[in-house]
Image (cartoon, rainbow, N blue to C red; front, side, top):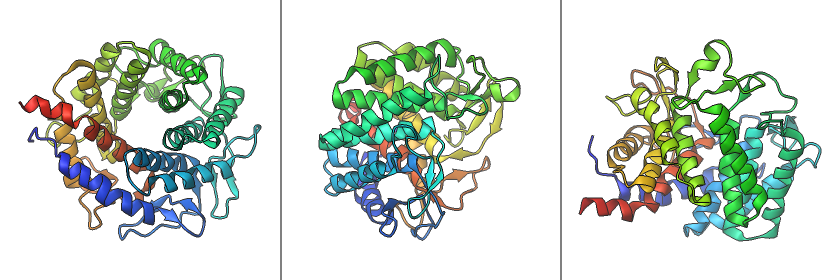
Length: 379
């Protein structure tokens, strides 16, 4: 594939296609909630539920869009913050996992993954609006996490905890804590970020692979569960750790390079450039299909290494961006996506999950943020 990054196409899709569309079709006037899914005609699907994590993610998208100058971003960001405020059940219950069309609680389980995106949404809202309400929302979220989900080491992924301990919610809590610190300068958020990076170094990453599932003492889960690796998550961690390094003034390059190495060796199809969904810790494919989001994380990881080291990101970024634009985003309605392809390249999606916009938007805005520095490489 060509190493030319399609900057103009990325900018056009992000600001002229996706944001105007999702600002309209992605908001349900009746329930006053961001929608969960669309069909391929661009109409909302009545799922019967709303996930809190999606509301946090969409609040991020429109807050970031506002910061970048999109004219409707601030009002939609305010809508997201309003939804997060309304979902709050108090200091003992926090935010539910899912609610119904009329706001009724369907699953009230406190879930670290959802709560990380509550914090993330509020933090980006505060970056965009500098309002006290979103600052208060950040503290409510962090207070609840600290009070109800904190464990001796790390955090429980839900309360009461069931099943294996999970690394992925910790990654998103790190991501959210960093943004909260950037938005406020308050050390409680930086302290949480430092704690999570220490957990990553000491328990989650063995220097080669990043596991998904652990026992209560942070040993890798027994059997195949403990051997499962999602290349997209390794790439996502690489990007987040480089952002952490920029905030604290620490060189995270060795860790980031180690996190990128295994996915590039075993988690990317060299013929198609697709980032695979799940492999074993020896590289054996478990799910050789490919959803949209791991491809966005490959873009971000290579951009992070470029920022940290100056290494040319164009081959990987161009290949993954071209893949997204030509296949995943090549739909009758250009603002939606094919969420998944099978291992033999066939579309394998029945609907368009709104949760994926966060991944695409963040990756594409990172490309555009670094465009001037990347274009210098041509000279």
